[in-house]
Image (cartoon, rainbow, N blue to C red; front, side, top):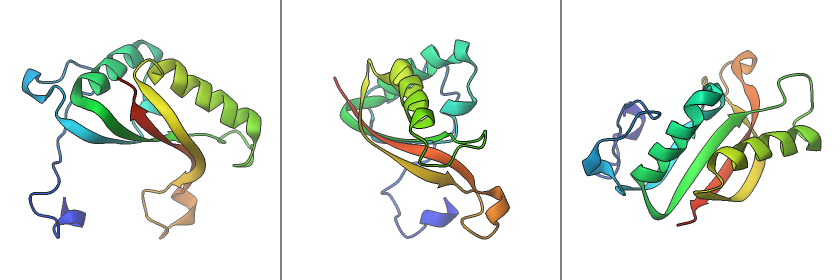
Length: 131
C-alpha cells in the first residue's frame, strides 16, 4: 500500500488464503489479479483450490499476471525446454479457466534492483479468463 498512495480509491489490497474458498461476496469481483510468487510455491494438492479461487474471484474477461520461478537449475533464461516445462505446468493448473496470451522471461526481484543476489529468474504470464 505504501507504494501506491498516489492512487486513493483506485486499488484494493487484501490478504487471504488463495487456496481456500473466497468470501461469497467477492465472487466475480476482480478484473485484474496479480500473483507475484504464490503459484510456484504451492504443493500439488493445493493447486486445484488455488485455481478454483482465482476463477471464483475473477469476473469474465479478467486478466491474470502470473510470475513463476524458472531457470533455477542452471538453465539460461532463454532455455526453451524449461520455458515449455513451466508453461505446461501453468496450463495444466489454470488452462481450464485462463488462456495464456503471452509469456516472457523475467526476474523476480524483491529488492527492485538494489541487490542483484536476490533477483531470481522466472517467467511472467499474461493470461485472460476464458469464460
